[in-house]
Structures are given as structure tokens and as C-alpha cells.
Length: 295
Image (cartoon, rainbow, N blue to C red; front, side):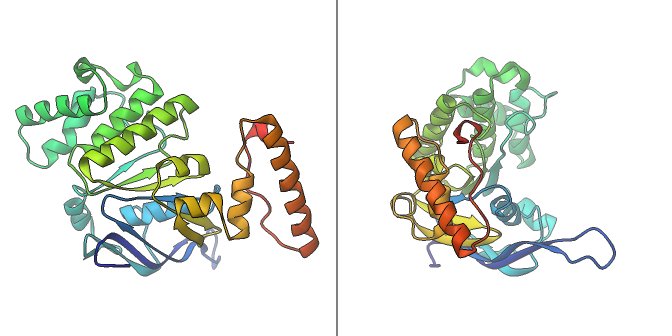
């Protein structure tokens, strides 16, 4: 961690209370540390249950930490109050996974995008002008302002969610699986838009995903999570092409390939790794694979 870091997470652990009298709490994160520089994209990758979403929620203040600390823009925000969170919300925004449920279905797009601006004291006239600029920035027509979320496709709704996150010119956006609900072509378009907006604004992304191909496309650095701990970190090229940790290798092997021959070879390599793990008594197994990738 350096003074140039925008976000610093140091030895953070998160426990969820267990049901039942005297039940042991469930530890979702264990001594997690990472840093994110200004204008950088840090990819946080892992299978379901790895703790990556919990880490994002802890940074956003949606869950409390059991130990460790979080600093944002030089300020300690560990388990900070609601008042403090409201103050820093201008500089820290989030894009959620489902672009429909994250948008109020009864509000027009203009009202959705103007809401955070009005909360910051901007006049209605100024907010309306800013909304037009936001729609243009995410490549939606200005007449979209008076329509409702249900009138847009999934990719268009995610563009609206991106515009809302950009409304207050934040320094950091936590992207929680923002393209996993979209088809592959739309995924690529939205990822390219995020990269373009980052180049224009200098915003930093903490990009949470289970998909290494998505992480490879957008990230400068990658951190791999497994069972609540960080197991590998490094440049995108190093982690996605020359992984060192066995779990990262398994995660890479679980990603499907478009070439049938290459996919057949990868399946064989994956079976061999699983066989060796079984002989050595290792636990954890392979990360989940896409349905069409099941041998």
C-alpha cells in the first residue's frame, strides 16, 4: 500500500451471525488486504461463495467488519456511521448485478438520474441539464429521459445504471458482477463503455466477477479469492496467463473456450488435475463451470 492508493483494505475479516443459540458465526472473509490506485481497475475474481461480494459490501458499508481496517481517499471508513457514509457517497458509487431491480420501476429515467444530484443540492434545472449529458455519455438518446426502465433492454438498463453511478463524478465505483446478466455481445459493449468512461474521467473500478475472461478484458490488476481469503494477486497478464496458485489454475481451466478442440484438451487437463487432487487428498474441487461445458 502506498500514499497514492485511493482504497486500502488491511487485514479485514467479516463474520455473519449464525442462526441458533450459541451457534458459531460464519466467517465470510479472513484477513483480506488489497489496495487500489486512482484511475485503476482491480479485478476481484472467484467462484460463488468465495467472499468477493462480501468484500465489496464491506467497502460500501453494507456489512460491518469484525476486524481490520478500510481507508478511502486517506480517510478511515471502517464501520463508519451513516452520516459519514452519506458524505463519502459522492465519491464512492456502485453498479449492481441486475440492471432492472436496481432501478425504481415507477420512476422515469430522468428522475432516477436526477435523484442523487438533487440530494447534493443541485437545482432541478441544473439536474435536468446534467441528465441529458449523462445519457449522451452512455450513448442513449435524450428522449430516453422520460421513459420507464421497463421500456429498455438489459444492456440499456445497465447503461442507465452506469450513468447514475457517474452522476456525482465519483472517484471509485464498485462494480458487482455488472455484466453477468447480459449476453456476450452486450457484455463486450458495456465493458468497452466502462473502459472509455474510465479513460475520460479517471474513475477507479473495483470490478467483481466470477468470469476470468471478463476480468482479463477490463482489469489492470487481478486478485483471486477462495473461501474468504486472497490466494493470488498480480498483473492481469501474469494471473490470467501464468497463474501460480493451484486454485487460480483450476479457475482458468473451468472457463469454456470457443474452439471445440481446445475445449476438449482443456477438459482432459481438468480431469487430470482433479485426479491428482484426489490422489493427494486435496479438498475444494473445481470451480463451477458453465452448463454447456459439462463433459
